[in-house]
Length: 502
Image (cartoon, rainbow, N blue to C red; front, side, top):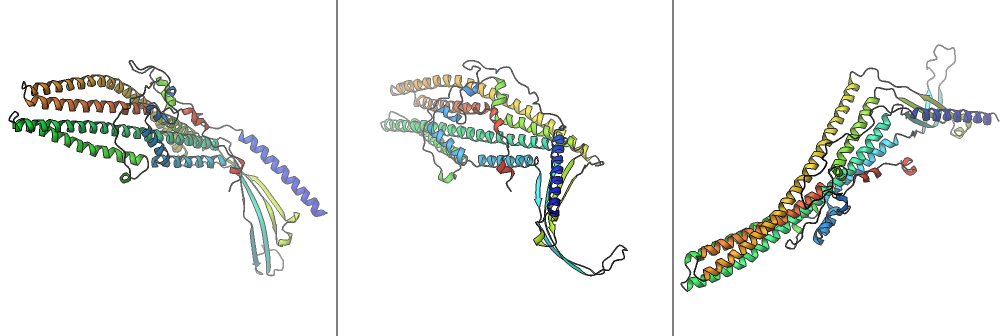
């Protein structure tokens, strides 16, 4: 009966003490969080792009598909390669793994919101000396051998009085979001590099086809000149000139094959395949650049993942300023201990074997030799550096978009005039060939016309390829249809199974 009453009193006292700790924790957790609250700093921005027709200002997200922006080029081979790259590119896998690390780091910080519970059951058997010290008390000593069985539990919790933990969680969450933006940026870089390499390769295929057709035409011309030379109509100079142009053209084709292989190998790396095993069938460039809207400059701040990453890094640095400032204030660790202890294991579960203790400590560093001040200055300088990096990223983004807009405008005009040059060169060749057949001009005029036509056709193919590559770079500069609002969902929200997981 006495043991039952003792156990009841023990439970009542423990319950009252626990309620007191919970109440004090709730009150103290409502304390202030020192340090500056985050507010996105301003960045230099233009009101509109320096553009001319056919450009117009509208939201780029309306013309670029979310995720698979490369589909606007309507090229099935490119679509297949991009799908492979998204699944197998190693740079993307690295960024995803780092994102998981950032998520785990944020989860570690979130876990500090909860108390820790530990236990260390133990068994000891010891013999006390018969000649042990008695502190001067007149007692008779004898050796004692005894057992001790204990099942203790310890609960520790540090009250977040001045927001040090909250600022740490804020920094970890922002870093998690920055890594999520980095994943999107890496995907955009890989996809845009793949598309640019692909169109460069197809442009070389077009040049190789032009050279192949030119070699066939020059071979027929050489056969004709040889026939005329055998008949005494053409001179040996005519034959030598045609042979020179024919072999020069063949040399160009061989060198272009080397360039094509380099682009093919680069594509192999991007799609995660060994270069020796990767081959692409030759196909001439027949795609046309899609119609793209530049949008407003202000839209760019929400469309580019690298800008979003730089902005989230500012939030990380801002929270770290608060963590450094909280070091000036005291901390309040709470603890609770309890369990069972007995000399006889059969009595371990008895109420009289229970023990408990509650306590709290106030800890404050008084002298640090200037370390706290230095840490605060370091955090503040880190924030200033991140602000400057954010603004620089925005300026570079504006530059990249404007450069590609200007480049596409020039290339559109250049393609029109170059097409006219090709048509004129083809007419010149026809006229020169006809006049040579009539004996009005030397074969040098024909050779010159052939060489000019080849050069102009190659230049036209290069301009068409550059237009597609510039379109890819403009899509990249606009963010590839991505939207920073998606980062709001990137948070660590602890669930019960995560909290109680070992």
